[in-house]
Amino acid sequence: MKQRIGEILEPESKSDFLSRGFNVFIISLIVLNIFAVSVETIQDISEQYSGSLKVFEWFSIAVFSLEYVLRVWTCTLKPEYSRPVIGRIRYMLTPAAIIDLMVVIPFYLPFFFDLDLRFLRVLRLFRLFTLFKMARYSQSLHLFKAVLRDTKQELLIVLAVTMGMLVFASGVIYFIENKSQPESFSSIPAAMWWAVSTMTTVGYGDVYPITTLGKIFGGFISMLGLGTFGLPVGIIAYGFVEELQKQKSRPLQCPHCEKKFDAPIERRNLPR
Image 1: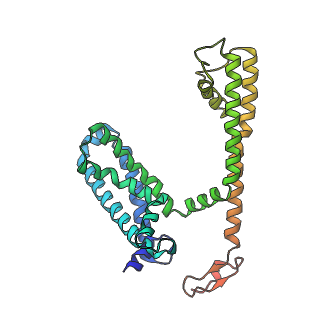
Image 2: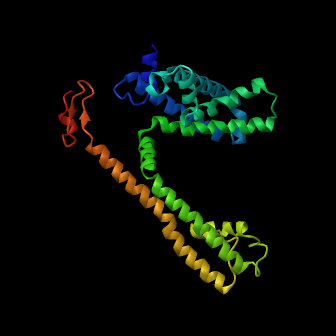
Image 3: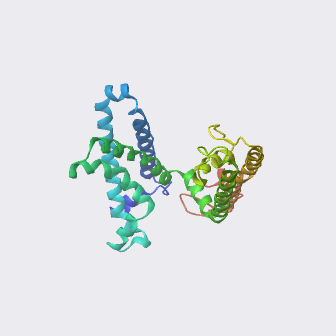
């Protein structure tokens, strides 16, 4: 039974009807929870349908709680978590398990602690963590995760360069504009808001240089920001191309006889 439950919980079991059904059910429940949290912020709807929204919240928490318990119970089926106690603790410390716990734990806190109503309203926002649960069930998000993993070194380099440019731009504009605008450019950290909005080419217009040298430097930073913030997009796009090529080069496998075929063979030629 433990083995069967583990197979149902894992979305990789594409040929399993129960696994696919559970996958669709959880994804639908996650989407509905995000919708419910958003709708609850509309006062008229929240007051009119408070009972229905509360029942739906209880049902969702019950499902997510049961899912979390079953995942902790069946995680020992995997070699890396095979030890009954230490393996489960290791699994509970994984990012996916922590997200699962963050979704349900705020619901149970009021039963054990006397919490302020304002704090309870903040805790209800933790239901938005269900959005991150989607990564476990979406193949597209699995692909995005693989791309980020393969390009993390390049992205870290770009991040370091970007942060360096932000500090440089903030420092230079502070020394240029501080005398003319001591309130807007009171310090280098305060000038970082201008640097961020300028380098991203958003330009809110609340803070801007008024000196000639400041305007020239602002134009230079704007053009430089186009290239700096465009680099991560190009790196991720290239990573997607590489990952898709890897997937296409993998041999196809028949879900019935598990026989493998070369990638160029059309799927319609697979035995049914």
